[in-house]
Image 1 (cartoon, one colour):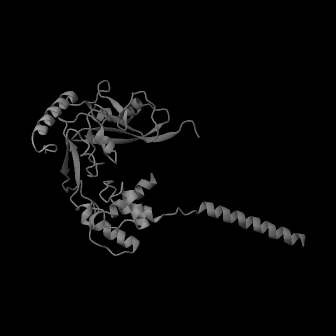
Image 2: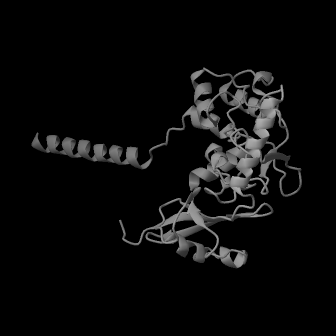
Image 3: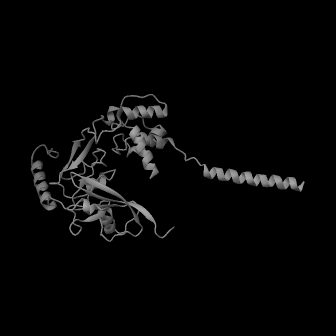
Length: 109
Length: 188
């Protein structure tokens, strides 16, 4: 095959109010960061700071210099608001309470 | 005598080549009934029919293992379309598999999400964007409202929201749109 093969990838970013998936044709050897720059998503969402926002492919964190494969969905993530540790502590406390109650599990909701 | 043999052989070879070329050039992609059935199904991949997704259900219908009235999201329109395709009698939806309800999507409560990725793994259509310890966000356009992400969530932060019918979200009653969509998909 030709050494400059092109294929489709997507660049995606999501907020609760708006989500975008930008289809993109890139050359083989394009990295994740390059695809993000080419997509123009940074202009569309000025709040994205690649130094802070983590990136990945299909739900897995990846380095910006990762070379893309065909049909990859490049994703730009946002940080969590809740603290997972704090949240876990709260859930544990809740569980203890519901164990004491006669209604056992499934007491919430 | 020799000329006759030569002429016949040349002709045979020529026609053979012609037929071989035609067979390759005008090859008709077999359109198995499974694909036709699958194209009518709503592609929610919700599993309410008892199969792992729309395509497995289509296979089961084609084999005669499943009935055509097991798809609640598709509702009556899909049953009628399937009945027409397969030359069977349309029948009411089997209530065992659930009831048709309006289109819904899910939303993630950002205050509660702990970035565990369980919902992402459960989503059959990759409609949740997120990674480990990163915020998870539902891509509304992709969400089919199958609700399969709700049970795995350890913090119960996923909620169902109905999609109101507006000009942006309204569409023709399915099969038709599904058919169009799937033909578009195939062109890709």
